[in-house]
Length: 197
Image (cartoon, rainbow, N blue to C red; front, side):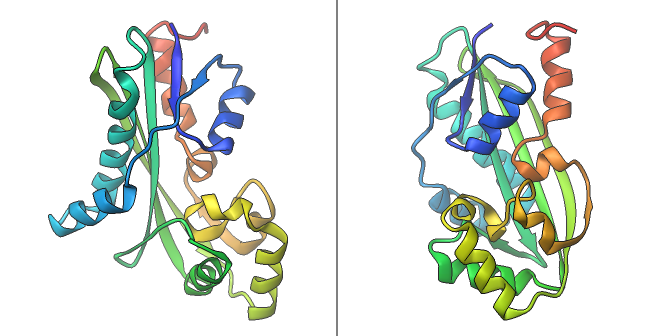
């Protein structure tokens, strides 16, 4: 079974390679902010927004890959009801990290599988992360060292890199924090016979 990852995330691709999965990448072009704003206006929850964005990505490219499993993914960071997006620039990254500093936030990580143009499976995981109290000087130096890589991550951190130093605790699946709930996804793919076990 051909597997297509509907994501331009290098971290997600690295996780797939680490798991020994053969796959192709086909990055969808979507106005994620417009979708998110529309869903917020309708009163959608952060969990449902993550799920809807993941599905929109899979649906966008499913028609180009008949007979394949297309996987769309997304993450939504919820800080006391405010949703943070990927930082636009280093100044935005600094503002995000200073907002998160010393506080706990929730990260919803969604994956939706499409086959033959239809959704056939979905999963949304929830992780709770508590960031340590950070000094302004450290935040500036962290961004200097890690930009532009952190620009592709909501909250401007990558847990698999120096971003781990920002946190006091992480409750939940580390793979989900990195970008995709790998364990539920692998279980589903093995049950369907797409991967050997």
